[in-house]
Amino acid sequence: MAAGPRVAPRLDESSLIRAVQSGDRDAFEQLVRAYDHSVLRLAVNLLRSQEDAQDVYQEAFLRVYRNIHSFRFDCSFHTWLYRIVTNICLDHLRKKKVRKEEATVVDTAEGPVDRMDAFEENSAHADPERSMRNRQLGQRIESALAELTPRERMVFELRHYQGLRLRAIGEMLGTSEEAAKNCLFRTTQKMRAVLGDFV
Amino acid sequence: MNCDDMQKSIPLYFYGELPPEDEERVEDHLDACEPCRGELERLRTLTAAFDRREMPLPDGMLENCREGLMDAIRAGTTPAAPPVADPRGPSFGERLSALMTALWGLRQPIGAVALLAIGYFSAQFSRGLTTQVVPDSGEPMVARVRSVQPDASGRVQISLEEVRNRVVSGRMDDGNIQRLLMAAARDESDPGVRVESVDILKDHAASAEVRAALLNSAAHDGNPGVRMKALEGLKSFAAEGEVRETLAQILLKDDNPGVRIQAIDMLTAHRDASVVGVLQNMVGKEDNTYVRWRCEKALKEMNASVGTF
Image 1 (cartoon, each protein chain N blue to C red):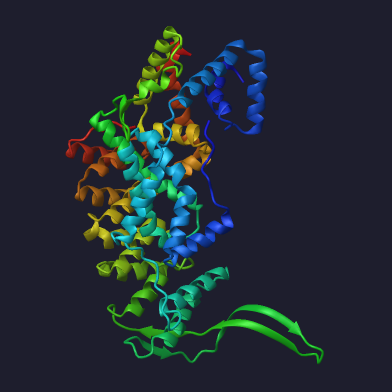
Image 2 (tube, rainbow over the protein chains, first blue to last red):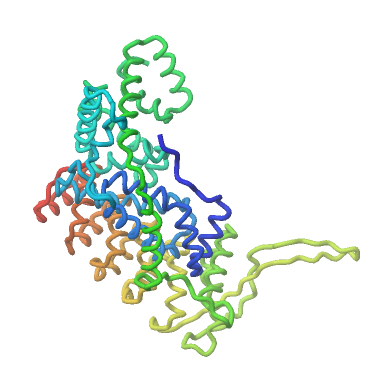
């Protein structure tokens, strides 16, 4: 499981934010660098499109830049930033859901790649039967994810891949910890329903 | 704890999201129950499969994103709005803001005093402008004793902060009057002052500064009356991105159904794709039947699915 976001020490971060609020562009760049790796990882993993992920990255940090003067330290900067990021990602997910664009082939800098390949054995001498089974598992996983609502996808992504606590996730998504727990539970249930015979 | 309870607890246990006492109960049950141990094991296998699905960031992607972002900022497509330092010293607004911060920090019931204290500062910094300052004959009011220092002669030196009452008046096109009203709109101690201030400000939302203050009140004021007034002022700007973002947040978070309905009306007056998602989300989580019905109605009018996620 992935580690949580890389966060600058709180004291430095407050000074950085104040510097950004007073118009210091270098401070903004430093602030971006403290968080942007985890933001981009979230967007790439969630949207499975480098182009969409780059859009999310740019839109999110530009919103931060435009609105940082209204940040009043009444929540952590991480929470504030992730509210922005998750909102933008959810919009993208909703559009994808409407367009039914959940193809297994994703665009990368090296050209289109079938994400089922990630489930293939790396070794050239891998057991073909096992390789086939892994590929089927990959397809089932994509089907399981397609069953999830954008919000369930988001909760699972933030908890499983980003390692965030459900309480923090609830705060970011404007809901309670209990609702985030229920969402995670529904997610695992749906996954079990689709992948039951594989695991 | 029985096997049915375990169904919900196992994922939370796996992710370390159970309180310690529940965690112990789950472990006791797992020790004694083979099927539930199997369930936990299946979840481990399932999540391990998901681990392999994680897409690594392609080389250079992060750097490209950083460059693109800073280029966009340098190109000035989205200027930040921090206050620009004035070489002549802090501006009226900055002093005002510092004063408000200091006064709010006192944690004393001085709401009305705070507003009048702003008047004092405005008197200091707005001479020559159109704001008229009416001196008050009252004595200074002590807001806080900062330190007490006895000396050898038996005298005591007391350092205190004091505020004086002043009355200022001016037209709404006077920037100082607007700033005073915007500060008053954030005076946490007095909802009455906030309602009156926002009621005046709402007719001047053409100013970006006033609009930002109205957005802040609409999203964060503790009093629904103030929030409604602020929304009223933003009606003509309901098509703007920042206003729509705030409206969506209000719709999802505000605990007052009247405010939520107002947000629905404003969002649906200018339809775009993002409204659909917000409304669908609302249908799924809205407890209030009428508000839910309004969301469903708006979705139907937009020929959008009422389906929730």
